[in-house]
Image 1: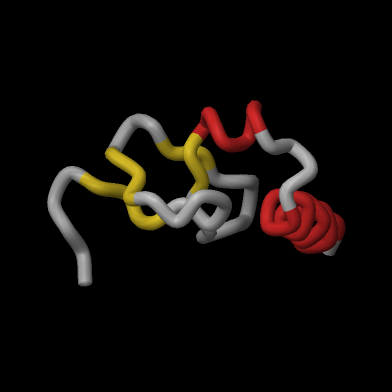
Image 2: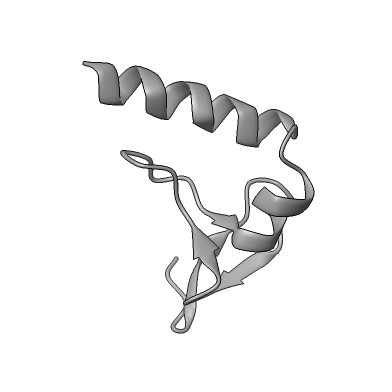
Length: 59
């Protein structure tokens, strides 16, 4: 379900992400808050998406 004004759910903190506050790794559909990327750089989901985006970009 798509809610107007929101980009999705943050995979790090599981809170809705407003348009303009989102961050996505290159070649990824997973949405994060830009502040979560800064505050929790070693979070499991953030590390996973970094690895996935590097693999996808290398192909």
